[in-house]
Image 1: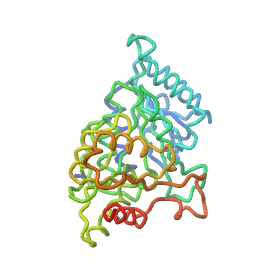
Image 2: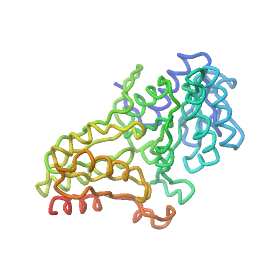
Image 3: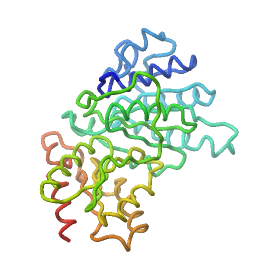
Image 4: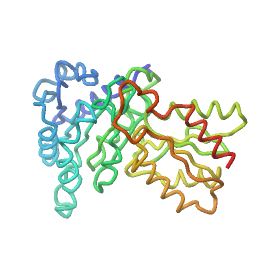
Length: 325
């Protein structure tokens, strides 16, 4: 298999889609000849033409309004929001139009061909306007699917699954990993099931759960825990909506403990939904309270980014507290 970073893997998935569907279009701010601010769409305009890979005005609401219309006519609409922080002007189009299209028509028409790609999270010293993790806002919206990859292999397979899915999907790309995460990725087409978490490593004492860039963090914390004689089961949620309750609950029944880590602020982050559901499903099996190691309830800071983001030491401290409860 070829060695790819996450950007190459995403580009490969988009290339396969454009070749597969003559009506598929990629559009967003600077995605054309420039290849996007992170170069995820590099070379695609030259290959497929300006009528299929094109720049839009700086209007996120307009991007998603156009995407809804294009997808409603059955064409694969591959919309890019340059940073997830700027998805909020498009919130009305996504929440009130994309998510409800199928429902309001009684399944007579839909925008199931819509995939929204957007870089999210910190790690690039982007400060408060280029570092946010807004997944929880959209997790409250029936009719959407939300997916987050942790490495290049997952990125290509999950993105292809999102594009093939018959529902609108937001594909959150952890920008810190764009070039930092490198691995073997098949050059041919493949998909990874949406809505299915992956047990990355089995363990017996505590379950660690995360998604996206935080997977690397909990794996580092698990290494520290192993040195202290604590066996950690590591799970990548991968899909936030729908999310895999069964796999998480099965793990927690085995270990009796759960620690959830995400970059977004702790209050009303998606970890809260997971904690509530798992305590309901596994209450009699819990050996300690479910813990969350998350971002702080402040705007994302520039100078104090390292203090804000959950790191391996914070997760390791939560592991010890859970085991010693």
